[in-house]
Amino acid sequence: MSSNTETTQTVENKEVPLAPACLVVVIIFSVIMSVVCAGLSWYLNQNQSENAARALREQLIPWVQQSALEPTDKEAISAELNQLAVQMDSKDLNEGELRRLRFCLTDNPVLLWGFVQAAVGKIESCSELTDIEKEQARLTADRLLRLVAERKLTRSALEFSLQTVTLARSDGSGLVVKDNPTTDDLRTFVKRGAQQADGLQASKEPYEKSPAQVFHMMIESALEDPQPAKDSPAQK
Image (tube, rainbow, N blue to C red; front, side, top):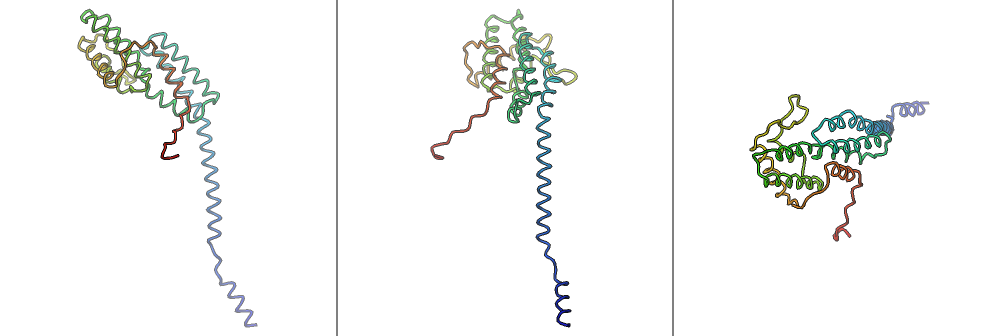
């Protein structure tokens, strides 16, 4: 009898190991968190296209339509953006394409090209500038647009060239072309642009593409899948 009592007390006093129970709790928690994160990621991806389409229609397209771009460029670029919004509505664009489009549209010098067009127009109508200076202004604009198409000229670099012929809007919504820039303002604009073109070794051949055509090229490039890097000889 005494032996049975001691055996029972030994079993009752023996501690139950907690490690397996904790492991089960951790596994269950991990599974729950994985499901939650997957659901959140799915939700964000589902709404990413909708949010991007809304931003194009409510912000970027109205901005383009009110910009200093020439009417034909406004129409073509707005149509391109509308088509992108339709693709976003239909969820035809994957996450990588949406990400590359966002970068393309955020740092896109073409959207500032109306200021370049306006500055060149003021140069051509300025009686104090020579024909040689006017021709240089047209050539410089062509060289800069070629650099944009080649993805060598950034938006901030173009803004630097435009500083002397533009002013910031009072509401902070962007730039506006000066009504009466001085000849020094116009010459400085051309000088800065020429220096940038020379520094980036831009061709001096005439560039026949319009800003809208360059914009289309940039959008197509953003939608293309990045090419995988080829293995180097050392990796083969």
